[in-house]
Length: 132
Image (cartoon, rainbow, N blue to C red; front, top):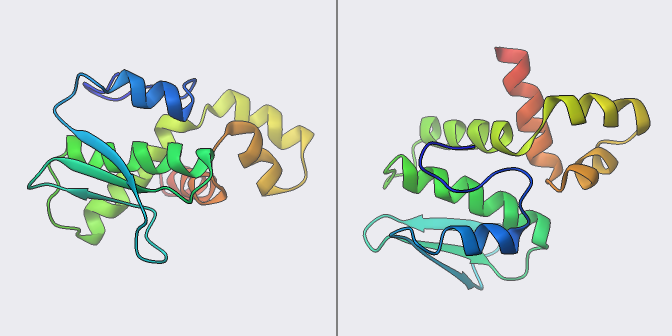
């Protein structure tokens, strides 16, 4: 789990939304410009998540944007983006569970599906391990 964030990998998107109600941040759904899944507005402490996403994608996006908030990221530098992606992956992937799923499934999307994460988060997790 994350420093000062009351969420963990076992939670659904709905559970995460409920868990952060007490935090000084507002989460809203919106129709965002194409290609943008979520964004964090540091000035108003608002996280926007594209309402057209699947619950799995919303869940990953919420964790990602909460990390930007947690780190007080107002500007989107590539370094901050990398850190948020890495920490999102480390938060949402259980290495033991992943190892088991890798023996059970052939395709990345099947593994990601079982972990309730996007294939992007799975990729981020693997590249984090590779660079460790």
